[in-house]
Image (cartoon, rainbow, N blue to C red; front, top):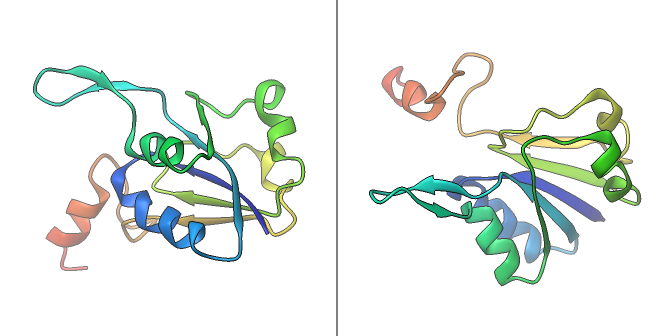
Length: 126
């Protein structure tokens, strides 16, 4: 299957590794733009972008998924995989992949939402 991957943090890397070593093909990765990070607040790419470029996979960095800019990317995609992504998947895109989207998240949704869902899950004993 042709896979479109959306994700940003280091948490998404094991999923990318699993897809890379599967029979599926990651056609592209869509992730957040470079942002300031670390003590020096130097601009750095997200972990998913670094991983994708290191593996020769097309990486698209964007603030939002926009129909006019990204619609053609999703043609021929069989499934979308979303892992801890900051992206809102718009309605026009949900029906494009033949097998839809799979969403992996580090917390129990919708119970734990917000800026620290994994921490809230741990604090709640979940």
